[in-house]
Image 1 (cartoon, helix red, strand yellow):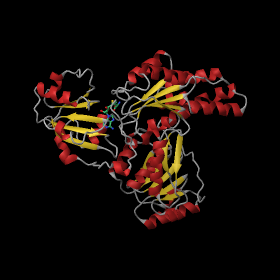
Image 2: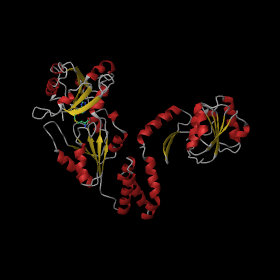
Image 3: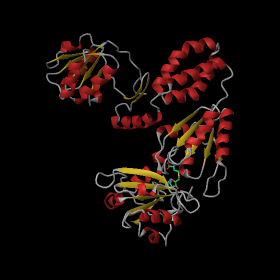
Image 4: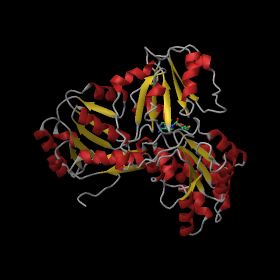
Length: 477
Ligand code: SAH
């Protein structure tokens, strides 16, 4: 290790920044965030720095060039002028006075560096590549940002608040550690991450009361997995996927996403194919409640968003009734994913002032929708589960006055490398797909906005089944 990583307490301590440009600004901001009092020496300041000086009483601007006496009594120094000789002079003086010094862009003159920081105060993660590559440090930082939930600061505060009580409750350090392990990876932490601080405190009290017999109650995570591309998962979805004990999933969740669930989690497949439901909805609801009551962290993975044609409401209804804790994580719904990846903005100033998501599910050869309303101009309509009912959709829209020339797009397996878009009009779309019928899941978009695709299409894939694509062909729900 070339450098010793330490976290320095500089609250109310005098620190020196020499320079008036953007780098000085960045360094000054870091020092201020840690509570230092800053002496800022520079004949002139960029406007943003000048604004800081105006607003912040703890910055004392000395309006002139650096003089040796500026270093008197400072705790640490930053040289960030655009003159290398001046910077070097400051560094030499500081070192002689045993004041730690950082010089912008002159690593050879520094004796400390400021790392890239992930700030979840009081949790702080600092990344340094020494002087090798600040860009690399920033890249690593960006990756960590996605791994460290924003709520870690709140979680650390909660730990601090309960520390003494936990100490009093458990005599042995080993028991305390086990307790914190349980708390930090379970329901208490999850509530903190989703900002439910009162519930987190209540759960913490329960855990403390339970003592050596930590609560047996698990919880359910109802998680939207998006339309197919794993890159479209949310950070929270991924985190819960990696800490679940059991995953309950159906056909609409793409294989590459299932593969990202914790390896040793138990996988329970509950099917759901058109006319071939492997497990009835009520059974699924009961199964989840039972698993959670046995103490498992149950991940219910849903295609797209759980609250859009996903029966998410029904599933958590049962959980709520049975007192099982749960949380819901939104996902990118098929309409958003498919529209973006097909180059079709769902609204547009000139063509559509609203967008409606409807189910095109065919039952007894009809689709129960308000067709007169759907036939109104200047809107976009998105049909989920509409592939089988497409002839009915076409008939009904035309019968209610929509022009046969109204553009239509079918997006098959949107956002995946198997995506295929069929474009046409109400009059042509059925014959367009006769030769080469699309496969489920397919989303139907009707509206003038479909024509924008000619210009805006950016994600074109040519599905090539012969080459052994990995995305499964999913049936219509
Ligand atoms: N909760 C899901 C929708 C479930 S209903 C969501 O928010 O997206 C199932 C229907 O969604 C399918 O019949 C199909 O119309 C649509 N769908 C889901 N994923 C899709 C995809 N990747 N490409 C095209 N359509 C999709």
